[in-house]
Length: 494
Image (cartoon, rainbow, N blue to C red; front, side, top):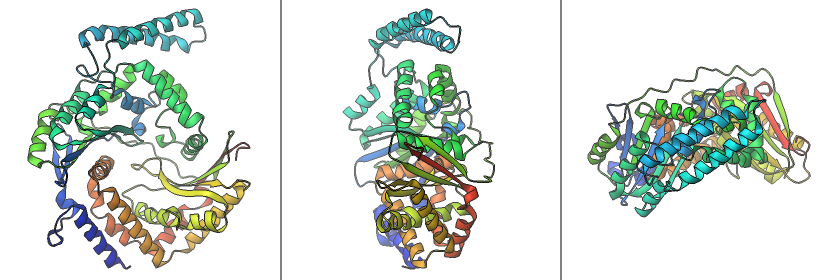
């Protein structure tokens, strides 16, 4: 299929996607309504009247990359804390609860200050921990557990969730269209009047999450070790959840500081997709969110990762089957090479017909699975990562050598048929993602938080303009031994 036919396919699917007649097909840019509130909040709407539902996303242009070395893990813990309620929700009596919260924080703060001192009295510490436990038990009687979730569920809401990444934090819900004002009331209250109740117990929950997902998980440990080795300067090297000692020493003030500075309209994107009328929705958002103080824009990260000047390798000893990850530094959007990498990674590792899957899994039967993905963030230069799991009895070195052979072949060039197929797959994947209200809301919200949703406007033309020669040049420039980091995990360190 040639470029013209691929572009026509893109337009046809967009026509179906937005449910408009072919003779009046509107582009994505024509359907997105964009507004800016006086306090700086960005608002994106796409009206879809096919079903009486709305997907509502609130994203902040803040993630773990914006933390200092003294507050690593704060953004992720803050995500947890923003589910704990407000002065109105999550409490039976806030006036009675507030003095108890203050006492809990005082005792918890004393424990945190003393626990790291070599001369601290273990008996006194144990006494304070017992006091904290008693206060928490008393406080529990005043808490309405998971009240946000209960209210949404009772009113038809589904998918109430949040996620924190390197570059952004997002809160989302899908709900009936006639409950939009309920959403606005709850979420604006959550941003204006959050109460970080149950802080110390939730901090323990996050510490256990880290232990389960990274410290006792070979794949998590391998990935974390890879990032910490590939990046020497840039904060992409730090885990979003934080290191164990970071989590154990986070304080309520760390969370409050991040929350009050950056989780504000200056860094906020509100995205609605579904059955509503834009004028009514905008008036609603202005009424509930327009009163929030603007706050300050999150500053850009100034740390720049130096050019890598030689292969880096790390071996992680862990009682598990061997695993392998190989990372190459690459540019991020909107650099031209980032579009090229989208195609390059599609050809190399997307699906069962990709080069690596055919070579390593089907033909040579060296691996049980293989994948290629971009990580750990998208705002700053990042990595192309190849991951593979050897078959039983296959040496990791054999997998590694086979991957390098395939990369050598890629550097020699790709066919026009491979390029066309990669373009179609990327296009269809993007369109499938945007078919649902939630998928479109998430896509718009994410791209706007990363730098602007209009990146999507010419994305198709950009990947259509990539030639086989350009792809080969990019592969030759970046997929080199000096630019790679290799991480191995297994009983013998891989």
